[in-house]
Length: 102
Image (cartoon, helix red, strand yellow):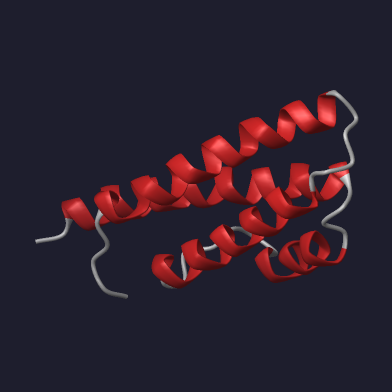
């Protein structure tokens, strides 16, 4: 694994934060137009995992497939959000470990 930089991930998590906020509003108001935003979130998560080089949450593949197949559901949104959160935590751990290495 190569050394990663926090700066490379900040724009991705910032974009997810905006998409997440918009999706929360849509689901709260029970709007049906969440499909495009969910697709953007899924694309963003894919980009994140390519950049993260193997730093992925437990059962990532199964959960990601669930999100892709059920992207119209609130459950898929919650799962997508959890995947982002867990990846962010794993990356933080990785940055700490790499900073301790000579």
